[in-house]
Length: 135
Image (tube, rainbow, N blue to C red; front, side):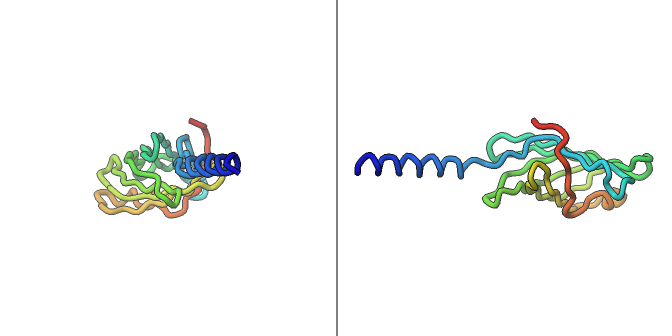
C-alpha cells in the first residue's frame, strides 16, 4: 500500500513538472507566399524558459513599398501562446500573439503606434508561418 502511494506521488510530481514546462516556440518560420505570392514574411524566435525573443521582417518580392524589420520580446502565457511587444525599423510599434499549429505557428500583429503607414498592410491577423529551420 505504501509503495503504491509512493508511486502515485512520484507520477503526479512528474506530470506536474511536465505540465509546468513552457511549450517550445524557438525556430525559424516563414510564409514565402505571403499576400498571395506578392510578399515574404519571416520570423525568428529564441526562447529561454518562458521568455521569447522575437525578430521578423516582411517585404514585397518586387521591392516596392516598405520592408520593415522588427524585434521584440514576450512571454509564454498559461494558455500556451506567446504575447509580445515589438518595434520595427520604421518606428512603428505594436503587440503580437503567437500560437502553435503543429510544427507551424499562427501570428497575429496589432499596431499600437503608427509612424509609417506603408508597413500596416504587412501586419496581419492569423498569419500561418511554416517552420523552415529547427533551433
